[in-house]
Image (spheres, rainbow, N blue to C red):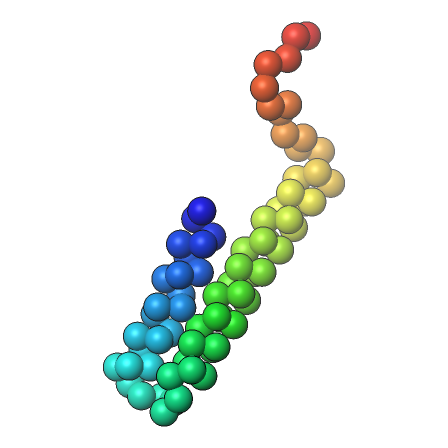
Length: 71
């Protein structure tokens, strides 16, 4: 849910900046650039999260089991 909201905000920000500064005369192109920017930021965040989990795993910091467990 948070990623979808972030993607929506990025697309709106790119389209809004095009409306304010007119950096491209084609509104469709501004929308495509906004979608591409949202996609790249999402990939970056997901890759960063996966890298963080891999580093924690390699360093020996295992996450606790989720749910109810009996020792």
